[in-house]
Image (cartoon, rainbow, N blue to C red; front, top):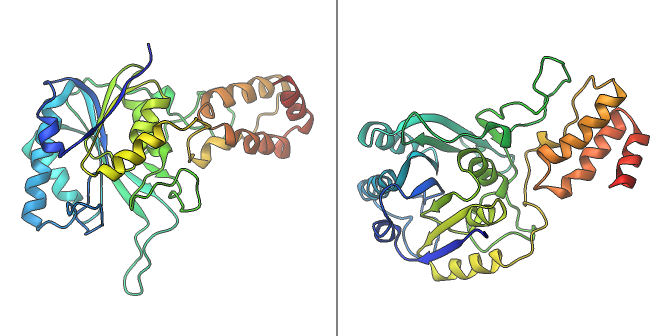
Length: 304
């Protein structure tokens, strides 16, 4: 059965109240940071008290909607992240799991003080029993060791993904579009095929594009009608791989000296780590060729 993606226009506080209790498996969202960004609706220029009240209200609804095994991921900038953490932990008694740092190489420049080069993502769960599919988000090991799990390692809580640059074909007319690989990791980790994912601040539609291509059902809420048009256009595009990747996915482990093991590993690596990133396959194969065996790569390309 095909997955269903629904994009709904309106204020998320009103729309969330129309959904049933404990009907959502995963909430992953990038709300306004209250930094006066232009989203075309004035929602990013509230007073501090207004913003915190708004945040508490939508997060309270998020808790109500989550299934007992559900997870919530919230992007947030440094100015308000401690307040959001306190709301989730102290006011709503959700279960803290991870404070994830998304590190990037380009950002706002400063002449006094240090230029910011990261955003943060808070991961909270509804209970101690929650979905987490580690095998779906592992990264390649640095070294081949018989004692290692060569299916890969835990990616950790510091993630490096490039911004979506204005020259990229997937770039939307939105001021804070996030890379698809960020959402890919969260959605694969914390939901299963056929699960329901909610994004109350759908924005450029990244979360719903990832749900569409990973066989999840999705509900995206967005107040700006222009963004809704962009999202629907984006969802109608053919899929040629996600627009970003953790560069560690293309590394070939060191010490893969046994030719038979290496050949098996190369095929497994492509299936395990590059399934949604066909554009990275050649880069990976080039790394193998440079480190180990050009003839093996030639044969792999001919066989596939």
